[in-house]
Length: 228
Image (cartoon, rainbow, N blue to C red; front, top):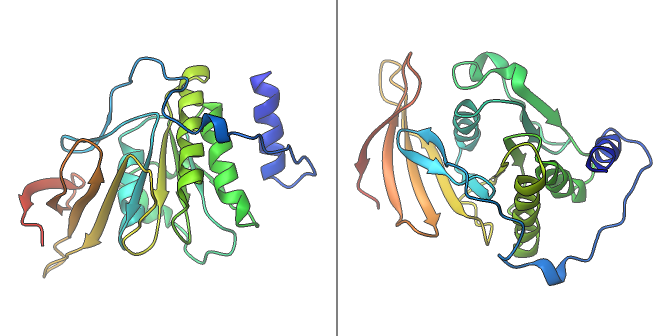
C-alpha cells in the first residue's frame, strides 16, 4: 500500500533499521512515464514559472532565497533536505516575508547517499507540493533522471503534482534538469535590496537576465537586464 511504503520511508529517514532494496530502474530512464495531464506551472516571481512534476536547479549565493520564493508561491508542506554536517541553517525571522516557516519540514540525513534517496521518496509519495534538496555538489545525470521519474510517479499516484528543486553551489551544473536558475545579490546603498536573476538553462526558453528588487511587498521582477 502507498501509505505503508511512505511510512516505511519516513521511519528510515528518522533512523530505524528499515533499509529497502534499491530497484533496478535502468530500463525506465526515459521520458515515457506515468504523466497525467500537465498541471499549471508555479508562478514564483512575476510571470516566471516552473513546471510541476519536474526537477529544477537553483544556484548562486542567494539560491536559498530563490527556493523560498518558490515555496511562497505554493500552499502546503515543504520538505527541505540538507546534510546533517552542513553548517548553514535557515533563519525563520529572515524567511517569514517569503514563506511561512511553519510549513517547512527539515530532513537532515547523515549519509551523503541518503540525500537524493530521501528526495526521491518524498517526490514519489506525491504528498508535498515542493521538495528542496540543499546539496554540497550537483548530482549526476542518472540521479536526476530518477528524480524526474519519482516526481512523475507522485503526480500520477499521489495527492498533488510535486516539484523538485536542487540547490547547488557555484554555477550549478546538474545535467538533465528541466531548468537552471541563478540568483546573486546586487544590493545598493541605504539598504536597497536587489538581486540578479539569471535563467541559465531551459528546454524551451532562451537564457535571460532580470533585476529583482525587494521591499515590504516582497521581491519584484524588474525589466530584463543585459546578459553578460
